[in-house]
Length: 343
Image (cartoon, rainbow, N blue to C red; front, side, top):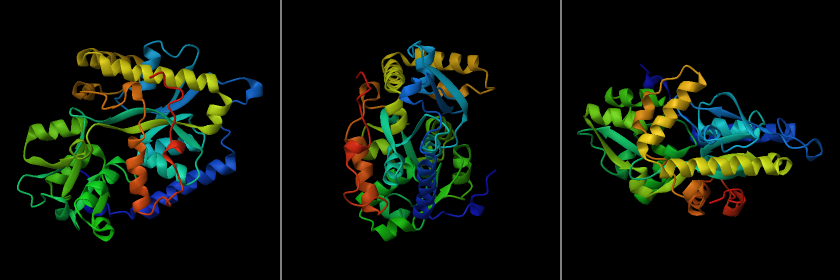
């Protein structure tokens, strides 16, 4: 059992800026050279990445589908969050990482030389994140969140920014929005923390949401799909120096990942789940495959993970409004490219 009372709400802006600044500074000092080939030595054919326990990433699916040609993936371990994954990309510990688009924006604003290249998760009618309360809770709308504790999986990511937009659209001021206390809780503990009264609201998604709903006694105040419609929420990124030094490898891995996303978008759900289960069992990482049974859709809006302006513009506007990115500092076309995506 996680004692949420001991997990004090974190100063969102200061913590996020500190972590991003450290990653960006590390990049500047290292020259972003780790793992990247120079054109004179020829391109690397190995792309390092971090995984997620019990899940299949789309580059992994691409490899299993035989789409990577002469490029090989190298798994170096599992990540703890999207922001951590793209910071590891910035520092050169890995070559390709993925995170929420808003986190990508703030890392680029801090000076990180990365670019989003293909979308990999999002929200639709089947795959979404909900902000849940206990039945009978007085929290029914935006103003009811003032001063309340909301459990999220990590700071500076999808759940925080979606909540901020919901509250802003509900008429709350910046000071009122900042009064909402975000508490970082492992997703596996989010339901229990809500039911025990340690949190007023918990964000639940995927298998955690479905199991919690089946147990009853909770209800959503809103979901990200209710708020924003279908959208791609997160993308894989590559460093600029990796792209420059390895253009053919970049095109291969991004195009293969896009085709894997499209495969999952267009195949029957049962076929996708069976393939994911088989991949997890064969790769031998001592993982539980039960979560695959709860997979419903990719949640990716664009065909093959093609990125739309809106999917970065909405988070860029929000980052400017709350002061985490300076007005005029970034344009949307600096944040992503569809150049390598065959769709």
